[in-house]
Image (cartoon, rainbow, N blue to C red; front, side, top):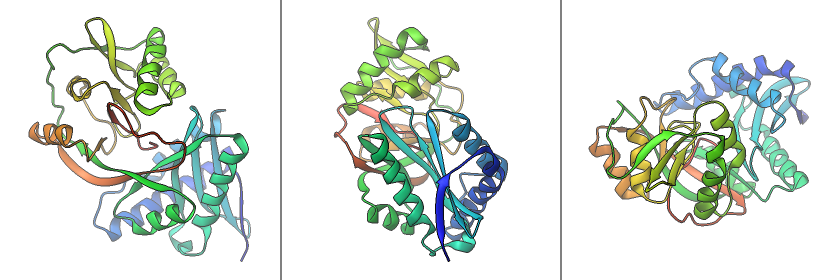
Amino acid sequence: MTITVRQGTAADVEACGAIIYEAFKSIADQHNMVPDIPEPQVGSGLLSMLVSSPKAHLLVAEIDGRLVGSAGMDERSAIVGVGPVTVDPNEQNSGVGRELMNAVVARAQQTGAPGLRLMQDSYHTRSLVLYTKVGFIVREPVAVMQGEPVNVKIPGCTVRAGTDADVDACNVLCASTHGVHRGGEVQDAAGQGRLLVVERSGRITGYTTTVGFFGHSIGESNDDLKALIGGVKEYPGPGFHVPSQNTALLQWCLDNGLRMNKAMTLMTIGLYNEPKGSYMPSINY
């Protein structure tokens, strides 16, 4: 049996989307959890965005010409976000996941990316082992929060729609928190009408690309993140990510009626700085 990994194309999207659905469902069912991908079309939609974007990359794995897995790479910013990474449930423990992740790391080295990051489902111990074996380091436990919109305002914080004119200020804020910015994602969010910013005394002190599964948020303090959480009408997807070690923010979410859907783990390779300030990662990082 020979496993080959190559760049994915639009022709791979439908088959790999079905694999993503089956893989997430199989693992979630084993642990009595709700899968993040509710139907094959959602998986295909994610992959369609990857193959159509010049700032993303899709790797697919084959055995004897048959698709058996895939791994996505979000390359919009200096730090590459990895995911989704899935293997056909019928090919688990055959080395497909290892070959995909080796290819992910190799591409990052070839492109000169200073680091890779991903979010791992804590209940899926095999993926934690796999990612550790290829060099990822555990950085932060994360709680995925969901529920009815909090609908609160934080005194002194004004939440408004962000524009292209706010991107530079958001990038400065992100760099001051993480040492690097995520300008590609922020620019996309501004262009798509998803960017929200927090102003205090006329100065941007927080932003989010979406308070939800696929968005990340940065704030000078927890009040900025609370203002963003309280200023939206929904939390798209399975929920938004709160670093579990930020006890004050996690307690505030719980006190406001939000529930924790599951735990995840932020893992990294390469450049990583301990965050200075408050933040909420996306499903990529």
